[in-house]
Image 1 (cartoon, rainbow, N blue to C red):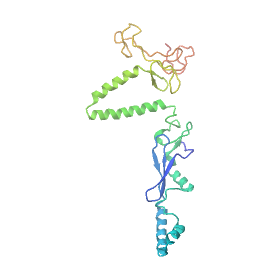
Image 2: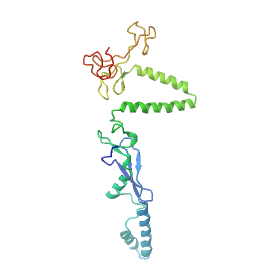
Image 3: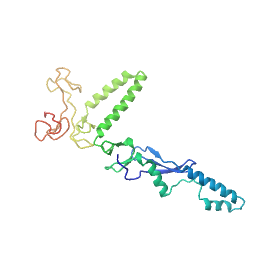
Image 4: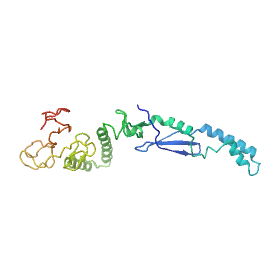
Length: 249
């Protein structure tokens, strides 16, 4: 597990028990709080009360003298010394990681521990996004089923799949774009174009399906010339993809 190389953004708060720091994830803004020095706050408050009792009868100067002797009341301080800030950071440092690519300091939810990068820069970005989408879809499906909306959700899912089938797709990271988009806007890989609406064998309307409804012929997405239709790698003139082994069309 990587160690953060820099302190993330923070602010200092005080709820009446002494000042503490709240550190924020650079991506999702989730906060992790340090603990105030409660013992120090109590001890200093008792000292202030004792000194204040002795000097209470000194007109005008009693309060000022007490401030000079004991220092400011920690119950109302909203700042930390550099030493106190470093101590607060040490309390929560274990929850943060710095991405070597973007240099953002992020929390565990925004960090891919398998690769050592934040989720945005991880080589597994497409896989992570798919897993998050599947998890969110499962939650929505469960709620819909509980309210008797399973059929409605199923029809909506079918419509979404049909819409995706009519989009250009990046074989590397799964990005969808308008038909005719030649290169992925995220990674620059050649895009796979959507399957044609007409069967190349019998000419029937495929309605975006993977197989012709009339003759059953497979309708495959067209890949750019010289590019693998599965992973987008350069075929280099070969009959099989040198990366994934898919047969060239």
